Image (cartoon, rainbow, N blue to C red):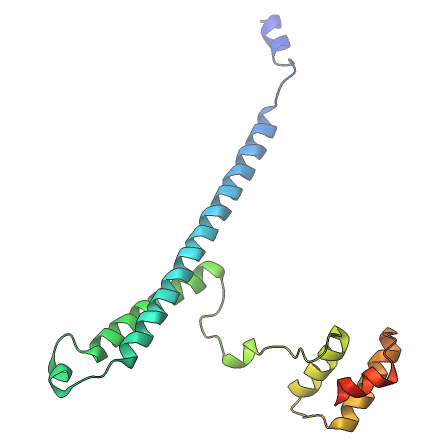
Amino acid sequence: AAQLEGDSNLPGPSTSSITVKSKTKRRSERARLLKTRVKRLEKKLELYDRKIRQVMETEVSLEEMDSDTSAYLKEDLLKRKFLRTWFELCDILHISPEVQVGDCSPGYEGTSYSAINRRVERLLRHGEFPDHWDVCQLIDRVNEKHQLKIAEKERRSLSG
């Protein structure tokens, strides 16, 4: 029995390191499966969107309006499938399905200087549309603060 106790001290992987490795492997496998599922759902949404646009563009005659295969019914069915897929994707990604258009506003990219672009973006976000003088002052302040070394000639072309 003493020899059996000594065998447990043999070098090799411990059971705790094996369980940690298997847990990490399972997590990475779950993450991979989740990514593929998200991609599949996104492709499905794109497909439904294309089909909805196609159906919306088709002309509907009076006879087709009474039909069970009318474009309106097809559109309704596709929109329901789109929403079901959208809610499933939101559930997986843990995001709100009630995305507002204002949340996804594109950034300002009028110059090659990101600091200036951010400042102009901030002005626009607060509902102010800057005039030429405002932009000149903004460029001067950002130029000083971030030491961009913008020459006078370039400053004039950026603000104009």
